[in-house]
Length: 335
Image (cartoon, rainbow, N blue to C red):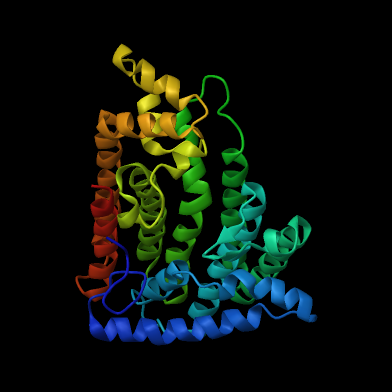
């Protein structure tokens, strides 16, 4: 299952009138994003527009627009600006991610570091962060404070991803902190900005911010499960990609925490080089049968339920329905 609704939006919006409003405003955001990628020179403009033009679900700006519907003024110009802020921040982080990961492809296109070089990719990411900061300043001091805190958490999450947990630290807790910083923080801000600039009550703003962090992190964790559980024709990518690359994920960390002697072989494999096809296949098979898979699924489902519970501050209606449906999608895609 994907997050796409019948309307083609990256969130499951069933109400036709709401879907139409969001689609129309998202088109405005798309146009503004293209304008914000333009620089004084063609070279910088081309580099800045490279990943933006490659597309993407635009999930974060869409969440801004949807959360704004919980307020009295969802059509405020500040809502559009905030939607651009979060997407520019997200795309900027992708330039840096690709350098760190030495990636060659992103969304089916060459990465900036592959097309140009690492220096251009890093500086282009910085350029987009700068554009995002300019727009945030237009939104006022409160938005600047929120954006600064979000950016700090995002970068700290990226850094923590590159280091081992400190001695005595729980590897799983370390990983969850990485996911919350890298993914949850900006999604939380997306929901918060929408509520804030759409004129929602403070309690709604706080609840949607918490909802965004939980459901955003859970969505990433469900990807961890799909990487192991799904067949390639279902997920669109080769199963066990993270496993082969030695990337820690929710199921693998839960399996490594096992004290059952019967799991010694699996734990030995998880600590080894899995670029070998035979070892990779053996590990994938053992993981799929391991209780850690059910533990990971149960954790994601519980997170989705926690996120849904926060939506009790919203009145019944299409906005709440869409947000609840997204949490359900997160739970179902991991089950």
